[in-house]
Length: 394
Image (cartoon, rainbow, N blue to C red; front, top):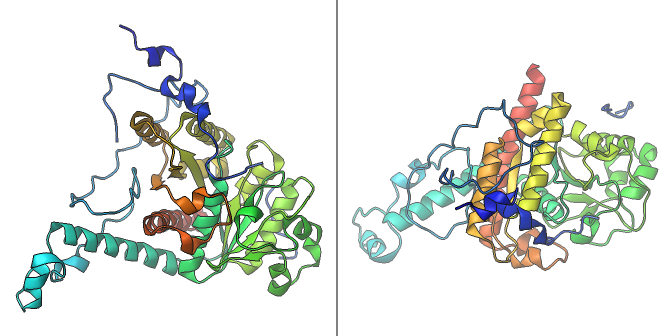
């Protein structure tokens, strides 16, 4: 009997357009001269020919993680390729919980049980990721482009929370900048109500000569990040606008996170690609956002050069928005992204604060959400270090 999913073309992804917006309302290069695989018998997705890469070898499977007991923790990364937890941080510790902890408090050398040991390893891993984020250095300012042509995939919340997480751990020096052609929702979702923003900054670009002046166009966040979004109306961004703003921001901030729009062929988006060092692609457990993510990767590969390098090292962030999700589709999203070469896929669990569609405050996130963003941020920082190192040697 034929499989109705296979006959439908894109399989389970055909109905993916029913997935609504997550939390977001998405609406050449020079600096400024003066400064897990499912059974093979059922293929659920028949990807369009423009997305397939026949000559591209399938990426090697991720390293198998060491088994550990179940503990309350987020699903950090389906395709995690980072370092394993430092077991040495747990090896010499005594038990502190339950009956084993009671015995340890009497002076006996009782080791933690499986569940407690796993929790300690988890904490050690999060501490390790925070250390990586805090201590990473570069020889110049670096930048991250958050992009997916599909609207409503969480680009703006991802930009705010990824940049905010890095800023909170490093103590600032992170600017989150809107680079969409038309006004986006970055200023709306960020904390504060600044009187001026991106449009005015573009207008006044050549008059700004110090950090104090630039700060007047930002919305300071409780995470210590600075947001430059659109306040009111502004003209459509050009490629030169994006390059000019990036050059100015890089004079005063060490890390620039760019919240992009939905037109990957536009002048502004092309310029954002050229001034980016790492690419982050938010997706949801739905076919439409995944297909659009793959089309973006295809276009970047076709462009070659720097754009292709971004695609080859792209990091996926899978957002859970609280609606019912088919586990079959979720598994297929992971499989397709892995096959197409996504460097790592990090899952962000559902968080009521993000879903409220109001101003986002990093401190209001649930602990598991915060830890998931720390894990993703560490992956991005490692990608930035590799990218800048490669650039210096080439």
